Image (cartoon, rainbow, N blue to C red; front, side, top):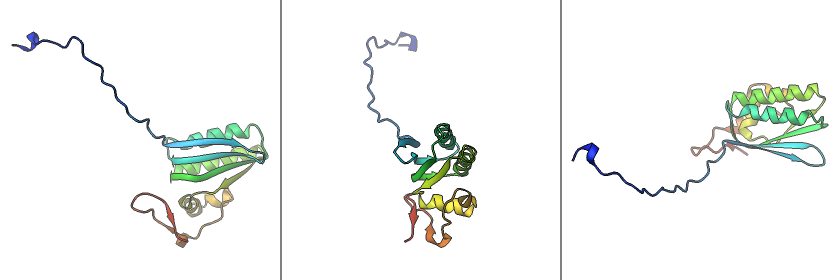
Length: 145
């Protein structure tokens, strides 16, 4: 029987795939409490996600709150693009007379802001470099106490 003569399936049953939804690389949550709007950042801040932080922050700044809080406690990766996004957000906040505050930055984020000199511009306390260690082999950030 040649290839052209082989029978074909007339009624193939569709296969169903029960794949789990992909976990997002980064999430941003905007909370408005009575004191100030707060943007909570979780996940990886890299070249494909960092601009989203400054875009959301700039949108909030157009409402002219007295203060805007960025919570960086859930950040698991932070690149130079994240630093640029924070500086861009700081410039937008200053031009609108809005105070930008960083809250609960992950230890390695504080370290990166300190060693690059941008921490002072953002009002982040300078971390001692001896208080920080490279991440565990499992990738979780670690800070000595």
